[in-house]
Image (cartoon, rainbow, N blue to C red; front, side, top):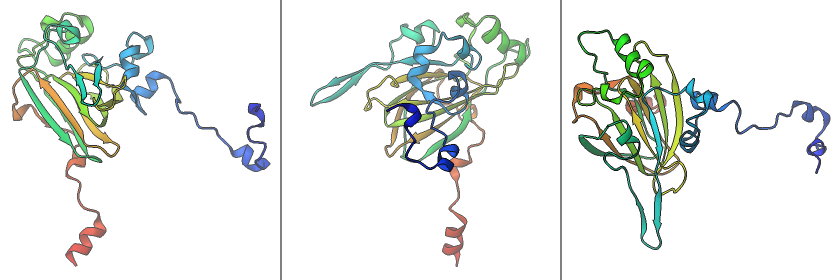
Amino acid sequence: MNKKDLWVGLNERARKGLTPRNYKSGTLGQRIAESGVDAGELTASRSKTELKKVWIPGVEIFSRETHPQRHRGSFCELARQSEGILGKIKLWPRQWSAARMFANSAKGFHIHPPSIPADTTAEKWLRRLFVAQPQNYSLRLYDREQWDIMFFLQGRAEVFLRDVRAGLPARSMRFFADGDNHRSRNNVGVVIPPGVAHAIRAEGSEDVVMVYGTSTTFQPEFEGRIASEIETAELPESWRKFLSS
């Protein structure tokens, strides 16, 4: 059927008010900062010029391959020391941890503090690390600040990142990652630098299971919270009134 004839069965008023849905409205750069994109788009498109304007410095998103084992399950490597992206940026965790997020739940924005040498300012140091010398990975203070490396083993997750580091442009990234039980191009690993706030929301009806490595061992003082009220949301007002009546 000719596209012009698609809506011939509607009356004139309905045809004039009709707006066809666009499932990919906006450029890739706009979608990563606003509505979100598949993580696989980011592993395949990192070199695109438009991404450089929205990409948060220090963030890495790298693909992983899941190997199905018929009638048994699957096998998927997380990372190899000194190889791949982690080998390139010279980062290897001091601690590995696991977390489960129940379906329909979320982890509010949390953030880890960047370590700033005493002989400089935060603005100067961070611009040196991520603007002037972004590939000089030996400058990074992995042993003094917490970098996160996330892997998703089960479920589907929506990830939000917001750069709030001094001296760097405020940028946002939003993308969807799949657990290994959903074999797809969205099976990825994610590196998040300190100073980048991050939140995660479980998508769909499955629990999300994560494994993550950190460049330092767990230290409570490294855990800052921003807009994390979703984790302690109160019961609806009508429920509270009913329970107290």
